[in-house]
Each structure stands twice: as structure tokens, then as C-alpha cells.
Length: 190
Image (cartoon, rainbow, N blue to C red):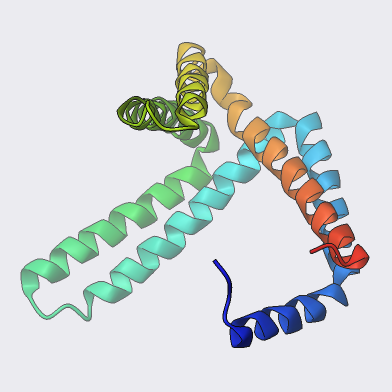
């Protein structure tokens, strides 16, 4: 598929603009790598930081839903939105008052989500078995299910470090990605 000349020119212009900012990508990548390594060194602190981040998001979501409830025209809709917002806000407050409980709940949800998404991925791979690449889908499904089962088998003990480990690994990979993008922009290969 080829792009129209207008879109192609626009993309070249945008990439050219980004090329001048390559150093920012590298700096961001280095910073994320450093934070990821620090998080890897203290998984409990990284777990608590990730739990607090989820708590902040829940407080904001609860506030928005409470505010939204006052714009709903029917009483029934108002109360359901208000209740939903209050529950979100309450969960956010609980996250801050008891981060260890919140990390246990979030770790269990992570395990369940991994198993569920792995099973769905496996079903997709099975349904498309005759196509190229379906073996990779099945392999990814098995690994995802196994990760979920390993997390679930050690729950709640592992809830002190699992979320922190995921955060640390994600930060490290995001850092390497930003560095690679910055260096590719500098060399003109992107």
C-alpha cells in the first residue's frame, strides 16, 4: 500500500521535525532506564508506587463520574452514576490508606486477566490454526496463561513484588525503546 503524495510529504515533514528532537528521546530513554533499574532494585517500593498511581486514577475517575452524575437528566441515571463515582473514589481512598491490600487485589486481578487473555488468545490461535503465524499466537497464549497461573499460585505472598516487577520491566523496555528511537532519528533511518 502506498501513501498519497500529500500524506507522504506530511509524514516526511513530521519525521524531519522529530529528527531535530532526537536527543530528548535518548534523554527520556536513559531516565526511564535508570528509574526501571532502581525499581528493579526495590520491588516493594515500585509496587507501592504503582498502587498509588492506580489510586490516583481511581480518585480522578470517581470525581469525573460524580461530576457527570449531576449532568444526567433522570433520577435513576443520576443515582447510578453518583454511586459508581462514589465507589471509584472510595476504592481510590482505600488504595491510599491500605496499599498492601490494594496490591493484593490488583495482583489477583492481574493473574486472572493474564489467564483470561491467554485463553482468548489460545482460542483465536486454534480457530486460525491453518494460517501462518498461528503457532506464535498459541505459544504466546500458553506463556500468558502460565504467567497468570504462576502469579495466582503464589498469591497473596507475591503481591508485595509482582506489580513492582512488571513496572520495572516495563520502564526498562520503554527506556530502551526511546533510546533506539532517538538514535534512529539521529541517524536518519526512521
